[in-house]
Image 1: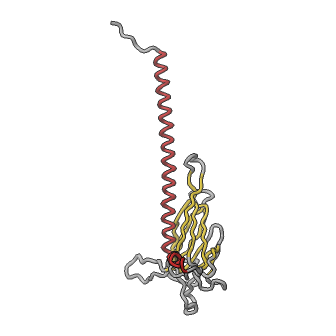
Image 2: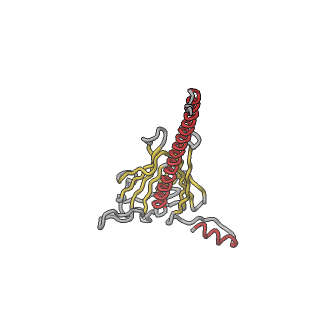
Image 3: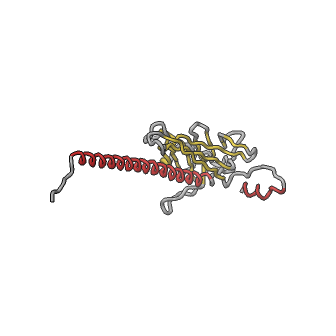
Length: 237
């Protein structure tokens, strides 16, 4: 019996089909890898936002101001927020943790938050945190500096005045209007730049925000009726 082999046309058709299958497979794998990279980047921004907001929360909720403003000339507690787009914030707080046993440190510390140009992404900002365990009359200087979040477009702080119940863009406890006063709460907004899931070559904004209650800030002075007193008390505590 004679054995019939493949003709040249059949071989060419088979190779064409295999090539098409290989091309489709390659495009599918490439698309899956791009999607994976985008999801990993977005997950990284989510994690960075959680870490940054948690650090801000731990610092801000125990911010404090001493009532004795003239005890020692070199010891100055203050709470200052500047609307500089991106914003800046420095204050004294009770969030310091000693790293070395029996070190001559307490829970009091100076903390500063500000931004500089991000070296990893042109046009973006990096959020920096400075902590100095010694409180002096220059709260914006000295201490250890560490990056807290990269790839940021915006960093915004707003402060609620417990006397007027209004949100302010700036706060200065060394001024006349807010002399030695803390806000009741601070609203923090971070806007990250991440790859667009539909087009990885483009960047999109991912906003994250939270409101942090300050333990030592005065309560809001909103007047409510007796029927609303329970819910108002819960909101203000």
